[in-house]
Length: 133
Image (tube, rainbow, N blue to C red; front, side, top):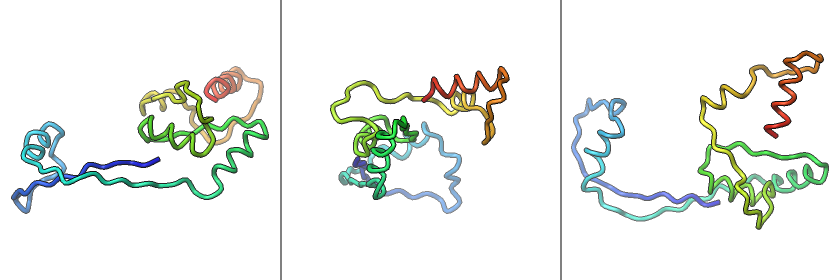
């Protein structure tokens, strides 16, 4: 998947002590964007590491359901997932779920080791992971 960045420039004079951390999005739109000059588009590609596609295909052959979690735009994530065989070419169903940080924190249990001790919590956790994956 290729990412495309738009490049523009603007000549401006800001004081040496200008506090960039306090520039809000609205402030930036009002003060930085006007009079920008478009320079062009720049494409970059970060290909998957060698062996990833084969590892995913081996997992599928073994009956393992592979999922991908990414911070990429859904279109980029979909292209990468197709490239490494997580999503089959020609599969047109929406292969992703967009989830906010809060929703993720609310849904994902804390801890790094889970055991099935037959408790109600263990059963709920198993049901959660079965539904998610």
